[in-house]
Image: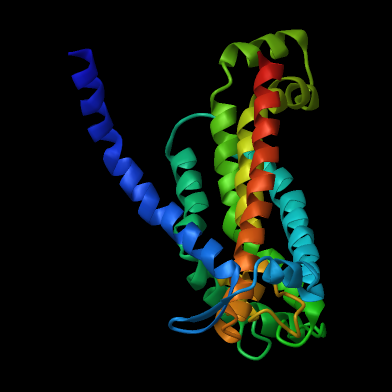
Length: 290
């Protein structure tokens, strides 16, 4: 009887296995198969072993794109994390219409699709007709994100911070709202300053949600594609060609399926490595609080 019940349980989880197989395992196995072959056409392929992996790992353009990706993600985190916490600290502490309006305004950028975000900022910062681009040039400051690498990076950073800082603020605000009022009452009785309250009460209690925000923002910034592709197309030159854009150029632009498959696996392993590192960090945070 017990054995029959266990078999029924397997039928319940079977749909999950099928969905995972179609959405992850089968595509991944297809990419692994392509990464060890030189494909000329339907039915025309030669086994090359690890040749594509060696070629991709020795590609200087991949190295440049990887360094560019780390710099971009690092700058995004350095700006967004403290800015998001600052916004959360300034939001209303009590429930009411003011807090509701703040939450709605913060959520608005998160509801806009990535490609639409790129289009909005591409138009907004155009030096000829864009409100921001034309306005900055009217002040006598030469600004053109289509021609200047530094202007392209500034525009990308502004766009990314505008789009995703609300996520950090919302998570930090949720962490602040979860702190019991008794902590603040005890701090007021002891005459603690605002900085002391932040350092010894709010920041430690927000540590868990901030770690999650750090993980989410790093992973998302590391996977960024649509916004810089729409805004700059990876240019000027290759100055904003991140890993995902370079991968698409190899796979679609050059139609090198073997190298693109090997590139995809290396990209996947990099993401997996950093996911593991952040998971370990999350585990350490939990032990510290225990």
